[in-house]
Length: 158
Image 1 (tube, rainbow, N blue to C red):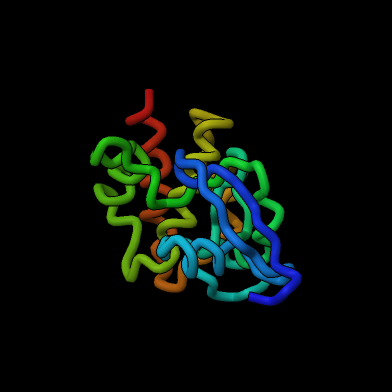
Image 2 (tube, one colour; image 1 turned 90 degrees about the vertical axis):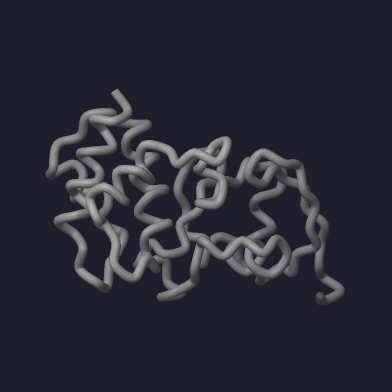
């Protein structure tokens, strides 16, 4: 850690934590290297694929572009925190039931984006789903199953 490192305090998956961060360190690096959370993955490094999606104060951000120092005082939620009490939430169950993944590399980002979408719009149209998730890429091309999973999750949440 460089001498320019600073201490930040934030809430990570419901727990208050403290970390030393370098000025250039991104949120994915912080989550992986200090907290062992590997659900958010850096893939493109340009905020274009959605694999690094993390919620900061309830809003999805690209963790590969989001500077770790900016989470000072924030609430950070990762895919590791979506199953409450050991039970999968409706979105996770829907992704499994619809077979909305193949390799699973992009799945955490899609799940977090879907949760945010359904929190904002509990009954989206297919066009709204496609538009909302357009920043997430699936290299295995499971898009039809992902759309079906979002529709199923919306029904499950009602």
